[in-house]
Image: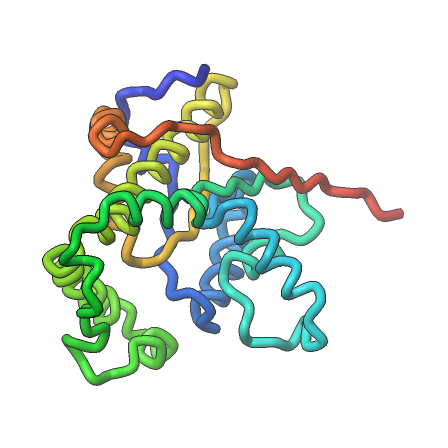
Length: 233
């Protein structure tokens, strides 16, 4: 059992907030990996979603030129044939659906929906591609706040519960490195909406345990995918 330390785990975790399937996010992934050359990378995916995305790219006739890949697969591709650990830290889609269904109230089952473009007529993808990340993140925060008012049970699962589980798994990876006498350095790619919540929990790891208890989340180790470098002669 890995012991979670009472320390600020942000010193060991580099969080990169992304907008999925945008060229700028893919470029950010490539640049971060090239700059930091990490031995550990954590992705906001579970095994099923990772496999689906990876398989879709492998079978795609436009592989290598397609702009539709996500930054998570782009990050693993950027690693190439290197000796690096890839960790999948997110909740499974099945568990998300199960938890949301269990918490729905008659109000949240109604056909009324939160207007996704309530705060701006600007295209957030276009803004992100043009480099206006802070503006997109601010819109996202407002949308999350509105989502909590309209659908609190759903947004609790999509944001708060997933943040708690991903933070717990990042703390676990860091602690595992510390226990093995290594200096942790974990490059982590998550959607921009998750960054602040995960950072807050990593700064106060005792809150992670409290959140797991409050949300009745069972902790399981993150999924490890090991890439081993092969010497080419």
